[in-house]
Amino acid sequence: MKKKKVLLIHHSGLLGGAGISLYYTWKALEEKYEVSCYVPSDPPELMEFLVNKGLKTKTYSFRLGKITYYSGGNTLVSPKFWYHALRILTQLKIWKSIIKIESPDLVLVNSKVLCWMGVLFNGIKSVCFVRETIPGNPKSIMNQIMRRLLDKFSLAAFLSEYDANQTGLEDAFTAVSPDFLDVLEYEEKISREKACEKLGIKSEFFNVVFVGGKDPLKGLDIGLKAISRLKDSRIQLIVAGYDKISIHNHGFKGLVEKIKKQKVLKYSHNIDDFITRNDIEDIVQFIGVQSDMRTVYTASDILIFPMTKPHQARPAFEIGVQKKPVIISDFPNICEFVINGKNGLTFRPNDNIELANAILRLKNDTKFRNQLGNENQEFTYKFHTAEYSVKELLIGINKIIG
Image (cartoon, rainbow, N blue to C red; front, top):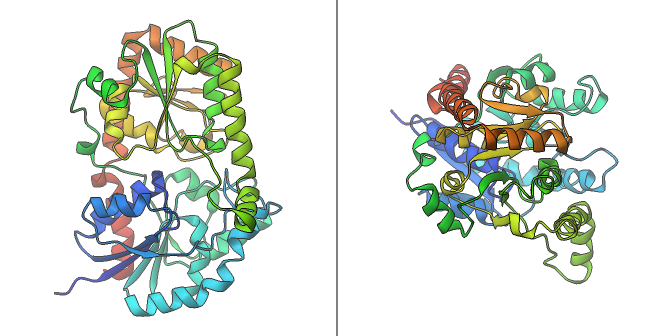
């Protein structure tokens, strides 16, 4: 019998958490369905990652229209919101044509920012994978508009019960399918010392890893303030992710790019300035984007995730595979997966003193650190493997297309 066809559409070419999750979702779906997937050709990181994994990826060469209204995203008064949203008007015909050519039995868009696409799927079963937490009051006008757009899909999949309950859909089926991973791709394969040598970082220090680069939402500034309080404690911060923010175009395009990146450029400058002023260059190691996070986690002792607004925290369970704990900002959307004193520690958002104290506590109390790490592995195996997570997604998809 011919397999039914699933079309995946992804919104960003960056190799972030959503892109990694796209890979695992694709791998799980192709066991039962024929899968076709579109990702941006620029930037090429995600495309190259998928190709290297042996997946035949299709690309589009334009910036996809998005509604970037979510916790940590853009507000309605932000020029970036309208820069992304107005592109939708020029792309409706393009995606109608692509969908007609692909002729899928089901379309899955891999982010809430693509909820506008629900208007394209008349007569076609559809899924929106909501990977974002809603901002502010769930009953605000914009949140209600996005709820109505999500209700046009056959199914909305959420990463947590919290996110599903906050959104409160009325027409679409809902499923809770937490982010998941292939445990084998994160298990330790080399010693901590070899991992440090491979990354060019010191192994004799207590290594605290931060994943998120210079994204203001991820809270690198909070992490640096905490580390600066501990600079006499033989602790160093390992920063993975995009760390070099630059303008690639000249003339008018360069001006537009500069305006778009104004916030992150300022943030990047402030980060560099803070490191210099506080004389912590020797204990802050930027290692850039890493396609193989296994080595990064092996070289590290704990993970910090000092997000400044509610956000999804994939690294928290990735490092759990190696029996290592996380210290994370205490927002309600993470309480299903990180329990203070159980598999990690939580601290008041933006409180660098509390974060510093938590880091020092785990450095000095090896027994407690190992206890949390063991539990974090248990949480990872329980909630973040395909056996658990994809099962819920596939149950929902099977209800729709069988």
